[in-house]
Image (cartoon, rainbow, N blue to C red; front, side, top):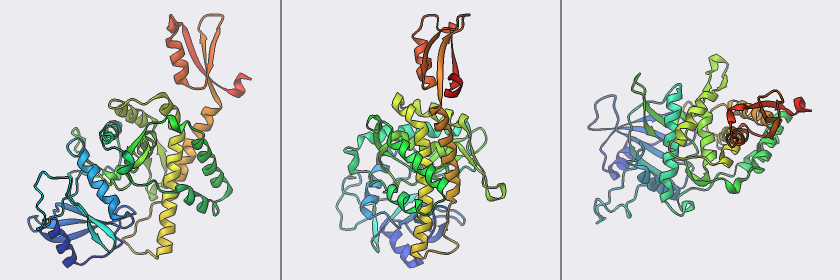
Length: 391
């Protein structure tokens, strides 16, 4: 990610030695918006290669990063993750298998430092339906695996107070933007949140936080990155966050920064997810609003980064800021679908000449379930109508 804190080669060498790694060179990683990151080339690496990623966490306290290390060790072996190296202490008598007392974090000016092995693969410029299916299955596996860490609140970091950012930013928004944000937030609050399963969630599973073998015909997931935001949240929110990036084609500046959501990719993602964990009916009904709310959260996140950079005086070529307007447009897209569904009903009726109406339903799923309960279900049809058409 972006580089905010500058370190000398002597500092890099000392920190790496604490992890048992022989330092040769640090290469800044400029993608991202939150932490300072470098690739570390060791004395054993040939020119142009590197073995580790060195991260200095700019905002998260070291205690949060220690929790992250436990989470990564829990996932290690089940998913392609890079677990932090343990700090080597000459006075520590722990055995190699004694993981309970291992330390994974070095403190520097009240900030945490970790060193993790590099994972093979590349960030995808574009996603495919197959990749969306695979990341859906991986996210479900993550949700299932982390249920072993209990109580989950002990391992997750607190959710960011996005309502505070919303209240600050809405003061400066045009009226239509403020209304969009307010409408989505209200609709989210009206969901049956108590019935939606919760647990430890990644909450930042964008394509640039994943690595893939992109060789044609051999595409496969090789790495899941950036576990700094792992928190206890509704699983369907984590699903929505991941869908929003993996199923959207983001046009570059030369293409007008277009935002194109692909619903066939979303279907592939959900098929992959449900191959590992089945969504309940409340989760399925909540997903459209969650997609809009997830876009709002990342709209606010990008506005908050701009605010933070401005107040902290952060400038320079190594500072990357993502365009918040893209997430605003994605939120508007999802909200349009929510509004349409709120104005749409599904009528189950006979296909015979009498065209008898069996029932009127608010979702296609409810109508299909009702049809399945009927004998000779093939003799009944489902048609979609707006409320205006019915009246």
